Image (cartoon, rainbow, N blue to C red; front, side):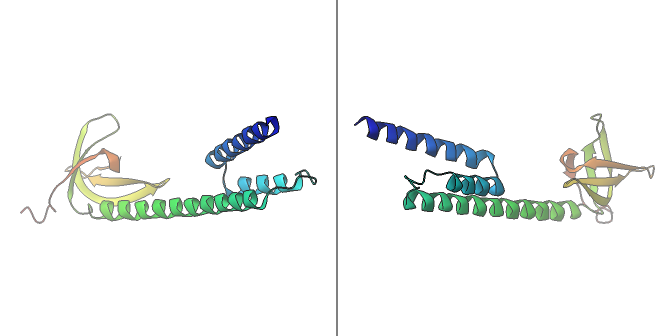
Length: 146
């Protein structure tokens, strides 16, 4: 009875440890940990086949989630690029880093560390660059409003 309780507690502890590892470690670290676990297992009590298969399934799930996350990031960049490029040639209102209101015609888009910035040509022909999250409004194309 005591052995089965101890075994049950150990299984729960291992499961919780595996879940914590999956949340904090990447694919490579998880695979290294699995290999180390297999190397150092007790030869008199080897890992159960079901446990090994479950860990491999967890590794596969982790890999699939990582790949899906990368695809979502790529899709988000593509969506942002489309929305930012659609501003070109239009009147854009926003705020600069000090919070002052800026209005100008969007002339170009630049990315720095996957963050888009739009350049605005103001009435006095000065160019001001603001991050996309500082844009408050996009108005008609100036040629359309005439």
